[in-house]
Image 1 (cartoon, rainbow, N blue to C red):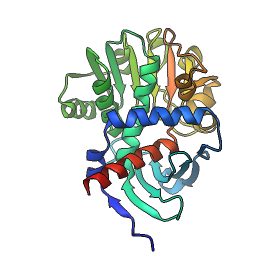
Image 2: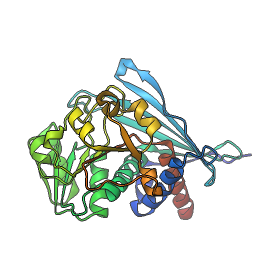
Image 3: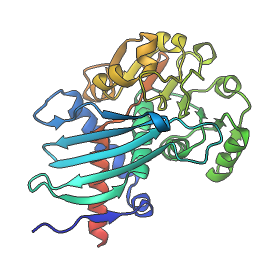
Image 4: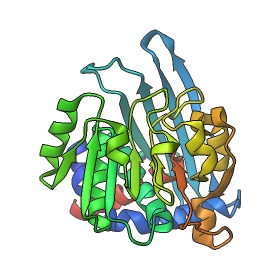
Length: 312
């Protein structure tokens, strides 16, 4: 008889999941995914259940990595909250299975996993695509994803200046104080991105907040928000003038309003760049449109479970 699943709380996941261990594993997973070998990586496009009464949806993200023998599903609720709402915009739980027996081995908090694996993949995109000399990082948004991106970008790269903008200035100021680093708060998006080498968009926007005319030629944009076909963070000018990279073509053309509504063409998946089958056009303006994948959650969950077992 299978043992009951272990429950790994949010604070434990936070302690067990580290970028230095996670990034190399995610790079391997992205490479394998972009080889399009269905016998190695099985990941259907996210299934969504509308929650119209609450202006949200439930997403189910299963994945199976055959070689690593990782079977995992994330269940995540997204909400479009009113400005100033104290309710969370996301809630997530990750289930890690024993693929041979089918039982759940672990139930773990999915919020930290989502935040860290998303930020880690954004950092991978920047490593591949940002200008060789990048001094200025701008973060648009000041929530949980903003904080995880701040941590991984400042841990992985050496920026001379970090800027933040949020619709509510007090939110941006709280974010800046929480980082304990030198982060400057800016009043407008246009001012915040002026001259920035790397721009991270982690807003709850459904209409564009970042416009191509404001973006420095050759800058890299990691666009993380707007995960629905009718939501956007970036305008048509930026989407059409930039070379667009994604984690999954299939996911991007089905779910990304930034891509669908602008008619922008996807140039490459990150995994293709890592495999050497598509170039990293770092000298051009680039956009990495992040939607997140089940394999990213699966790799993260296995790492958390391994670390948990080592401690127990």
